[in-house]
Length: 492
Image (cartoon, rainbow, N blue to C red):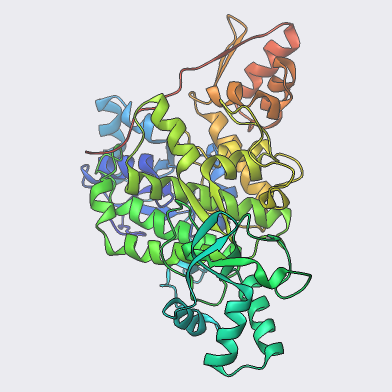
């Protein structure tokens, strides 16, 4: 199926994004009809999003047109009566393309915002990478004792300075500055309990006796550890886009033809996944504290979505409540020198350090260094960027700091268009919402009244919104919550 394949007569136009299972299923159905299909990736051509929304009244993808006739999304396509589908096929085969057919990208239009990140990452080796490699193979690192406790794979500040002076020929001042640089660049971290964890290297009474470890030797279970990040630190926003692009590429190539299942076993053996793992190591030393609110939102949303897939590939998809609890509290990355689990990212950073589902306390204590990264206020819109609607996806595949709030509003609008996100029953004056609204009710105001007001404000103009307005204006409205589908999409 060519991206802009056409014919002297008609065509089917499909607006889609990479990695969208509903788009894959729709295109597989259309391919069997033996008619010209133009696949337009609105992730690569975001300039078309507004026009598609104007033509369809919807924010989700796929959106499908037979010539100038809008069929709807994948669900609408699959429900077409055979005689209606045949009529539309005949229309494309026999009628010339009308002047008001939906638009294609202009030939000179850049293919990309996110598309530029498809290129393979090229590492610029950091100035201290070779020094750290030599330190790893020196006799400096070993078991050190403090009181009654022995600390494995550690070294004191004095031992490091002595090695830099004797083996690298540095003056003491240069050796102290180098130790400070290694600490600042997160090549090494102070060992908890052996000294002042946040002190500057070489400053203050007794700090040269503080024990340190190389970051890769610090005990943790993060999926991107076991190897030192040796590249010059990459900007957080750029790195998150690169990682998310690789995951989406993998996801797209290992979806079943009907878009329902993912071959995680095949994905884990793909060389692209190996490239992804190598790139994820660079998260270890990324700078987080200088990020703006918009940069934090884009970075952590992209990383969360990528980490979920990485966790599936390494540990398998959870299949019951206990496994899900373990998965979201265990699967983690080492980011900027600190370990962040999926729960830490969602509830600690993006929700402004609020308790999550089944959590007894906030993710970050007052003394936790990760608290400095958390957003000062939770952002309820993140719930629709971390979850894809079951019958349509937001027309965004990666999030960028530029206009992140607009992108999140689009994701929320797309989610609410789906019946598994929101259903309105005018006859019963009842609104049925996704369990997400129940689990995180506090994020949406805390009461049914405030929750419904939030939903109404974030809906796109549609008959569903009109119905919701009508029943809200009529008086008391019943709110119930829809069952949540935890089914695995693994093909194994």
